[in-house]
Length: 236
Image 1 (cartoon, helix red, strand yellow):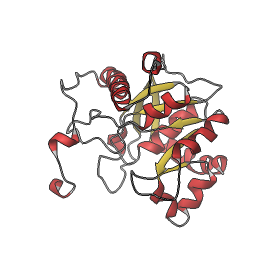
Image 2: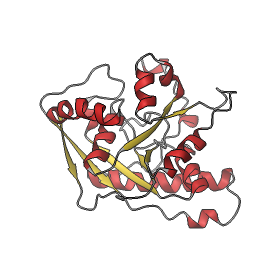
Image 3: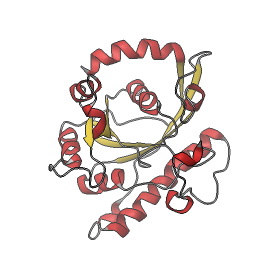
Image 4: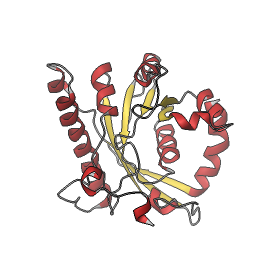
């Protein structure tokens, strides 16, 4: 099913988008790993999925479980091997996204996890405070965690936009970092303090890659939704 979807989507996507990868950008061609990108547009998953495809691997995503309940879309997600994730406290049915991801890891898959969990709320589209999913998965499974940044998707589909702007053709630049060294976080129990510290290391790595792509300095303080308390309705 994934190959079928790719054959339908990628030719059209290539008419709208060209990729520019930094010379250092590469992915492991064998074995499992977790790819952790920045997130600022609703179309980012397509952009990142196509980028991973161009770099020689098949992408798998951890997506909101509610999407799997949508007719047709849910079937496509399941058939193409994507991973449903329940929001905290939303499921009592024993759904275990870590276990589901573990199955893909055993099959040596590339699992894409957005560490911010949602679109960044930073006004200038810099990465905001990360959530624990990507790091916890890496610490509990022991597989490589690779930061990645991309820039240019907002020209195709701005944040919170309802439609894309396919023409003229857009350029998306991508920079893939080295796998993070998380060995110092594995010396004891994987508690909340350890996960929080490791998540900040990940977000710093993603931000550093984005700084290079944008040619700008990131803000000195990372956007923290819990401090700013911006409601969804407050934007309109």
